[in-house]
Length: 297
Image 1 (spheres, one colour):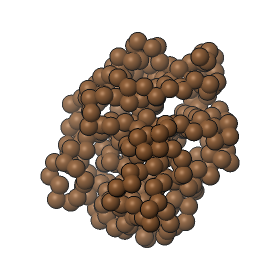
Image 2: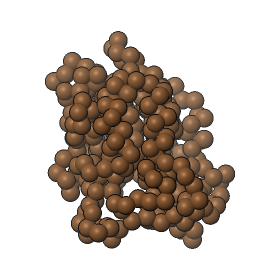
Image 3: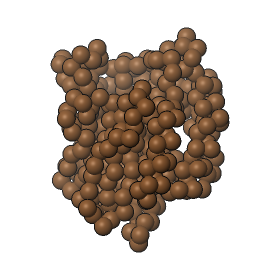
């Protein structure tokens, strides 16, 4: 076991209150130095979002934030430091509700960096919520990966909707040239990657962290790895201290692993099943990353 502080990483909780409350218990029991919530935090009740989905709405997620989540974050922030991002299923219209709440010890990040000092170690935390373009209609947090106009290793659609300003607005991402690669090139200038813990929602390409099931209806040409090539290249080139990921719920069951060492970088995913009362999470140490363990509660 490392002598470095122990941190907790969780993702894809999708509004599961039982799982959220378990995080508080673990923090208290283990003396966790910081919690990292890696996106898809809000309910996705109602299934895949479409314009006529009357259950999974902007207001439904806003109600969850106001009725439960803000108070939960206050309680968690009294126990430890919390760093969080939204994920592709969290409506961007509601991001100001958490970003501007000014809850002590709770920081939401969107292509931003914040300081983290624990036990005399001066580190940084970088948060990046965007994912590559998906086959789904909800486009709030989607960008091209490396090359505008193409994602060769997975299926996608460019037409869909954003939820900006509290309403859904039609958009076609074929008209944009924004890329994950360009964002990461900017993000790396904000801190020393080797002393930075990165909170991503997307997973790096061709790793145990981005593998979908063989019967997934969105498979392209039998390719089971659908993560970000830009993110993989960023890790290889910049060698960040730790990167955390979510997005692909089933990847641990499919790949058989929840972590990978890419050079000096520890990359990990909790691969949580939000439909279960059982929380899957990862504990790890930093800046000495010798300890990493996926657990369930």
